[in-house]
Length: 332
Image (cartoon, rainbow, N blue to C red; front, side, top):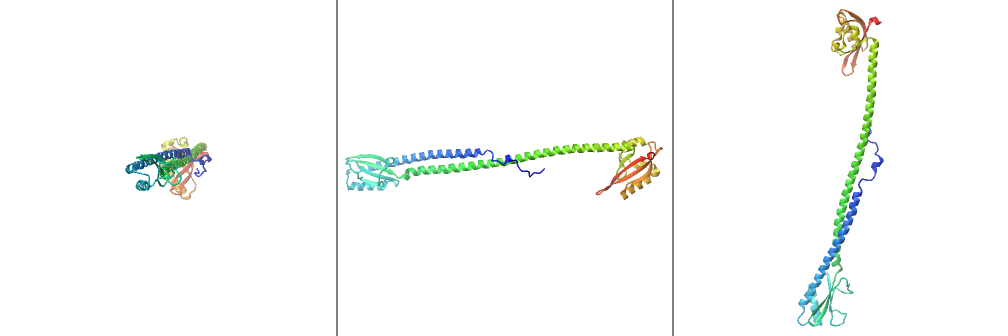
């Protein structure tokens, strides 16, 4: 059976179960996006809470360091400058405005140049003694956005890595499943071919057995029709097979003669001639003919026969035995 037969066209399609890595990929991306959004919002809320705490700390610092007699003059501005220079975080800008008069010029302004985004700034009114101030803090954009962006980036990196690894593992398993499916299909194909081959061999065996039986029956019929005694001897001259005609011609049962020397069926005075005929058949590789008397069961009556002897030669083992036939001379 040829094992290199082409595979069936249905076996060369897409890998099976590809929907599994696809589902893993989609679910991983969706879960990563959701988690990144939640973590970004949480980080932003924490940053806003931290900013509010810093703003309140500046308010408390201002109240704690207000001198006993404060007035809105140049010395006050210098004092405010000294207070916030020491305590102002680098991520915040601060502005102090007076509420005592309508003026757009602040008492103090640090990192708050330009317009202030009201959605990001925190304002607190500070009243102490004879003055009233408005403390405004403005966070740097990176203060609120950086934490959210960092959380979002970390979640996406971790989620994408896990999703890619899980997807690749699923693809690897799909490839293994595809390979195993091809191997199973190939084995099933070979098994089908082997079963067909065995069936063919069984049919051929039945035909050969029938032919052999017919040949054996034909040989038995021919032997029976010839009326001759057919026998096979081993290399020592012992009977291995003798035809049933020996019972009719010599009144001896074939089963009783198996394993016995054939020359015991020959009259004693002709046994030496029989041995010489065997030797001649072996050396000349030809059929030898000799006339001999065969003894009946009572060993007193003889049957004169014309005997033909053929030596059986094997290229490896040499002489393996003899075949002979004995026909009554009355039939000639």
